[in-house]
Image (cartoon, rainbow, N blue to C red; front, side, top):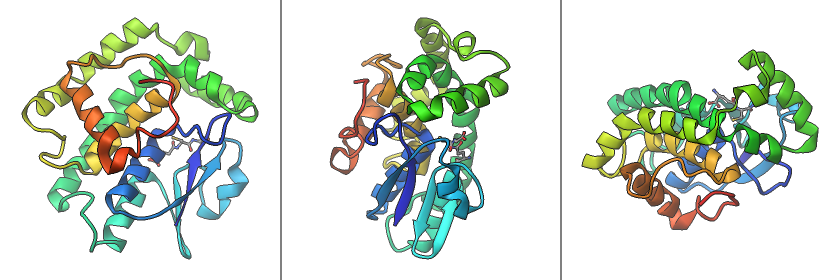
Length: 229
Ligand SMILES: N[C@@H](CCC(=O)N[C@@H](CS)C(=O)NCC(=O)O)C(=O)O
């Protein structure tokens, strides 16, 4: 299997939240993968997938894009391995977690880490990133970024339902992590890879949850190159 995985200036800096959720999913299924460093402007390299975003998973002759679709593919193609969702009802709830994460958490985290993220991009990506994101945000990157303290305060508020959940159980999915956990964990890895900002306090149950996932699969995620703790 091969996974096209967004990289920064250096090949070993892998920060994409959508790719992180899939790398955790592959670990969960105990599937070996070769990750291929990819940059924003390398659209030709993934044109075979019929779209222009990563992650793209190549499994033999099959190419799958979109992290949600990749997770569903892995669950059905490798159904004999540990379940990624824990059944159809849990898959439905994981879809809610995906949209909550993308539409609430990711928007805040991006505004906290934006200056660091931009600094770590490959030079060939910088003009594309600035132009595409400034068109999306309707303002400059510098204007869109939030002072860390303000962003962190917004994020800690937004994490409140997750914090309450993790006060009662070790993972969002209950006793064991599932793709719902990996979705949100991907967001924390995105920040951790490029930014030194502490998103949550060490006493926060969300911090302890992140520690458990950093330790999962023999410390797979902890070993990744990162700037944050
Ligand atoms: N819904 C897609 C989103 C994928 C996505 O936005 N990927 C980003 C990296 S995290 C990307 O490839 N961006 C390239 C670009 O903006 O041109 C998924 O979950 O896989």
